[in-house]
Image (cartoon, rainbow, N blue to C red; front, top):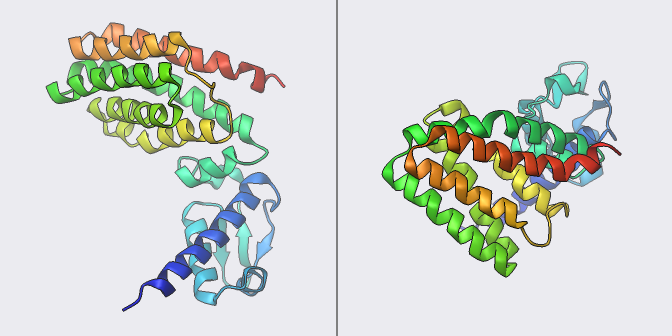
Length: 238
């Protein structure tokens, strides 16, 4: 059986989802605006099934609410699942980019130093060795300017520490941290080459985790994220 029709439906579903999701998070569709399946079908040229499924996903994110005899109503930001990676990406891609970067960076500052300290206490021997290896790879790739590969290792490094913390709440934020790291690069907010201080601090975090020094790991991660925050300050002051 051919899978082409299913693939086509997936593309249409993604188009509807991304477009309306971006419209809501970017403000083109305001709180209280009402959508209908008929208008969605007409706008995108999709089946009712695709329109309904797209709205179901947006409702699961808290962006819309479907009510009989009322329609599909855009919800206020207070109801959005702001930790959903797709919501984060839509906000990073829209006019609220700087505000989203600020809130995500502040979240990282609050969480990641504690996660690094916890990883120094709880990580397995394999995880400790992997952290050191990733930091070393990041230095080599960063100094060579191989930014795509560097970003892959950067995501892997921060994901590893969040999960190695032994705190399931920290681990659950790994997708959020990954999307903001990739989002910064995709919207052109990463330096053309990682600054030496950032490379040094990644290695300091890794070595501290490997040695089981929670205080040093927390301090190094705090300093690393302060460097990220300082790089963002010009955006936030505009």
